[in-house]
Image (cartoon, rainbow, N blue to C red; front, side, top):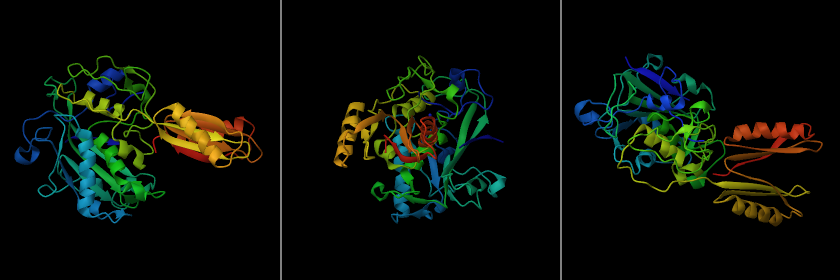
Length: 389
């Protein structure tokens, strides 16, 4: 029976071997991934990258609540586009819809289903049918199944150090949540479906959250927003551990539902993780999103200026101060510019504090603590924003 990995990316992180490796590099080299192959699953039963990764979409996905009234065809198209984003520029990684010929299946007796279905299956699930969704905060859940099969061929033609290959992945979406595809129809507490798919597919091909295992993150330097060069013949060459990660990477474990990341596509960190797992000397270099800047300004009277999605810190600061003045603020001052996310907290009897973090929830907590340290009482977050949304 195959083993499974449940997936609740300084640089990037991969879902490493079941037995933790000693170093971040060993973690990468021994990580499970899809093996290179010669034949498609539908034609021959061979599971792997031969013939593309074949996926099947269960009817339950189309039955989820889409605010924009998306048709089933639109839902299928959104999934196809997110998959295509992960395969962009990569000659060995592409995806084929086999929904008409392979029924999705989920091989866990706990949910009364069996069989492996296609290589990647997509489902919509209620909390009753899928217990992890009893937490309303959980929007997507991906499991991949790995088999200990001995070394196998990588996408660069070399033989893997890992003995574990992925042979199927299952992606579930929380059917109790509301979704939308049209980014112009964003609504609080609802999820931008293409962004969520983009995030979950990262897990389906073996990429992890960078914030979950900080010691296993990899980069070539300490700048999380720039390009990471991956040597197609020696993927771990030049990589070293780094605790910094890009707050706009789609593989980050929080803030995945906003439309900003989907519109920009994969970050440099995302494609580095992909290319380290699936090295190929024919990969086309495409320009990737390299970070966004935001800024926050405030006046003594409490007027604020907010800026996001700017290409430089200076541009974000200028826009933020102008925004504060346009709101009627006098003597506006810049609080900070930032990558990632920002939160500003104010106390009931004076005192304020702010914090920056790749994750908005972390920034909120840290801003309240900073406010209290500055003498504020009953500190509460009054403003939260992320540079990339």
